[in-house]
Amino acid sequence: MATRSNNSAWILVVVLAVCLQVAFVFADCKQTATGTAINFSRAYFLLDADMEKYVCNELAGDEDEPVVAAYLQTMTDEANARGFGTGMMKQAITHVETETLAQDPESATIHLKGRHRTCVHPVFAYVASLFRLGQTHEFEATLELIKEEGKWKVCGNPYGLSMDG
Image (cartoon, rainbow, N blue to C red; front, side):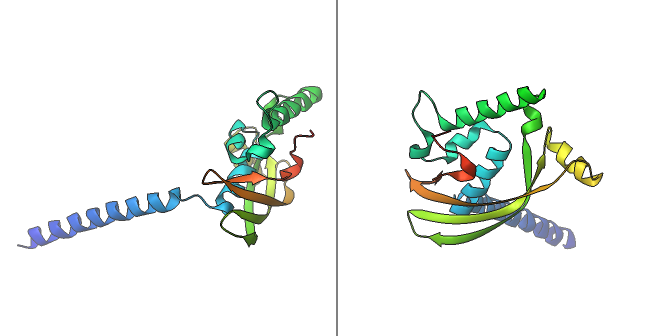
């Protein structure tokens, strides 16, 4: 009899864990203005072309000369001029703190503070921080976000990124 009771407890624990996991997955999928600001910032500093999915149509520019592609090309050219590969220009961000300055259903203003350091490889930033290699720099920015097609998008002039170059 004790074996059946013990099995029932384990089955109950497994079912409860699966239910909680499903709930956490759905909660994590909800897009927020703060989450979009952080994701955009990570992509921006890592020189990830996926940052394009976080910018609004106004900032994205036209198809002939997209702003994100122009920024990535500028960073590649700068790396080449220094004699490095593009990897040396990538920065990992850590210790990100956010503050929502203003938010309504269609727009938000998010202030971010954090640190960034060279990240040739994702493990490099961690190992470099353990051995105190390289430099860590502070960053601070205020991002303007709008809701476009039901998703939060970064607009304005984030980190100096603009159609003007």
